[in-house]
Image 1 (tube, rainbow, N blue to C red):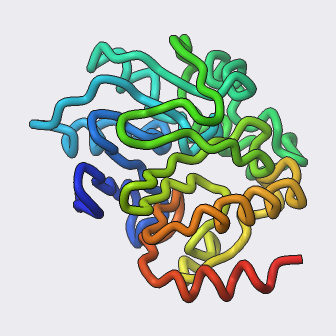
Image 2: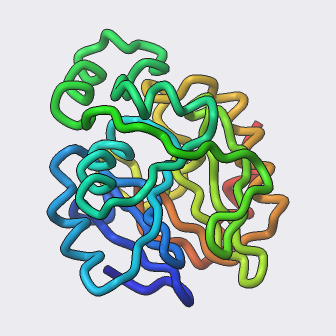
Length: 222
C-alpha cells in the first residue's frame, strides 16, 4: 500500500499497477478481481475501514467486494445505475460484446458474487472528504471521487494510464470492448478535466502527478 496524499492510499493488486484499488479516509474504493481479497485484507490491516464503494461494477472492480464486505462487516455503496450489476454479480452485462470470449472469461474467473448494496450515491454526495462525480460512459453508472481541498481525483476507469495489453504506461481511453458508450465517456473525461485535478488515481496504471500530460491528452480528444 502506497500513500498518495494525506489519507489516500493506493493498493496495487497486480504487477505494474495493472489493477488498483484505493483507501480514501476510511473508505475502500473498488476491490479488484475475485482473487484479490487476500491482498486487499492484508493491505488494510491496521487501518479503519467503515464502508466500501465501487466506481462501477465491472469484474475487475467488484470481484472481491462480497468477501471484503462480509469479512469486515461493512456496507457496500454504488451509484443507482450500477446497483443491479453489483447485487447480481453480472459484471459484464453492459459490455458491447458481452458474449465475447474475454467477457465470458472475466465473468467466470474475475467477477465475484453479487452483494447487497446498502446505499446508492449520486453526484455531489460525500464519501469521506471526497465528493461524488457522475462520469458515465465506460459503464452506465460509473462515478469518480474528487477532493477539492488538494485536487486528488479517483478516476476509476473513466480513463486509464496503461495499455492493458502491453502494460506500457500512458494515458488512454478505456478499451472499447469494455466500454458501453465511448463518446459519453469522452464527455466525462472533459468534465473531470474542468475540475483541474492535481493528482489522478486510476483503476489501471500508475498515479499521475504531471498534469501537463493530462492537459495534452484532453486536447487531443474529439
